[in-house]
Image 1: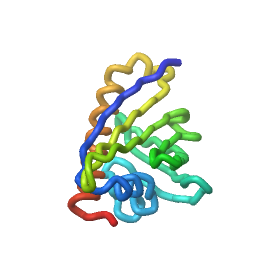
Image 2 (image 1 turned 180 degrees about the vertical axis):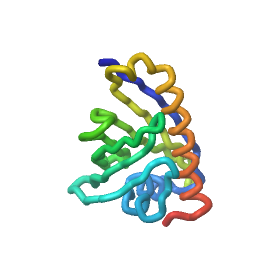
Image 3 (image 1 turned 60 degrees about the vertical axis):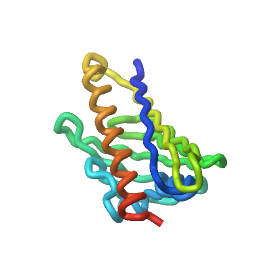
Image 4 (image 1 turned 60 degrees about the horizontal axis):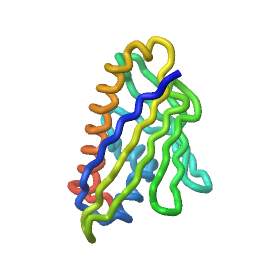
Length: 149
């Protein structure tokens, strides 16, 4: 088994505490459909975050995962696929204040690839990069234009 690691960052014009909160508020993501390519459902609270069911289409195939979200004391967060099509997937979210109204978001996606997907790794990497850029832009819109509070 090998892993694909993709990193991205996005500057968002909102205070760090608000940005950190929005990135782990999956009940909000479920209610408002923040991400067009990801259906969030069945959000359940946990002591340090939550768990939810995530569904998305990859190469036309519907994939479903049970994902645990853990918020850390420093404000960073980790999403891990516990079971499903992408079991073992880890997404790390860290945040850096760039002043009172600006936050730089750093995301790292670490995806294990098995079987046929190993052969398709270059295409999978491009897909993850595209999806990550789109997701970060959708979060920016939710925070800046829709004024998540």
